[in-house]
Image (cartoon, rainbow, N blue to C red; front, side, top):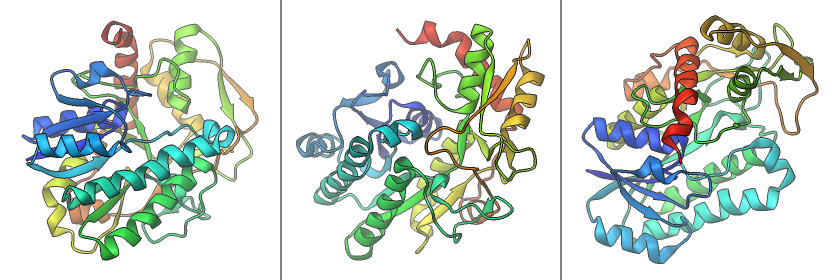
Length: 326
């Protein structure tokens, strides 16, 4: 079977593509390279272009008639950027996703896995959520994911396509074989900023220390990107057996605060980083972690890597990134 991966030259999409290849599923990559890297598509069937380009989508399906499913990873994902440019984020993440789905329907695609986000949840008193928890996205980025989920539910209710939303928590790490990793030199998430602080000898900023968590810093469910990729393979293999399931959380089930992440980083890194405290960034939220076992029950999947292993793989990738990406 072949699977079309939109955004397949990005961090998560390229890792999903590697996991598919290891499982005997041939990935077909579609990426505009706005944020993705062409190096991540080397040795893979690759189409450069936009998901809203209907002519290109028609060409992909004509040249690959055995595509059995789509993994839709293409999106803009930086929370502060979404606050500064909500129009751009709604256009890229919602409008183009709608057009993409229309093109898939026209080409007879019947299965899609959507890269959603746990950022759409309303944080509970204990910071845990499951798939039935109320939603309350706190940023334009998060709202684009919630809007897409609602849009896809309406489409799949009457159209001949089934759409499964996988709600990611917070990916860290890299492909353990170092085929791919974070393409950005200066990523905006906490671990990326820690690695930047480590490289340049500058303090790491804890953005927000007044959250109602156990130590005042935000809390997240840090899931290794390879575990995330393996969950997609399991979802592809079991897609037709999922019945009416539309949403599955992908997380470790453990919450780690930013301060705890710093402590874990300093246990793994060859030298510790210093910390300074500052205000919250626009769109930031306290965070959450999953309490659901739906992924284990339905996909036979659960996270296998620790936070420390994710940090170690992230540091290993950062040390070779510039030699891999020209």
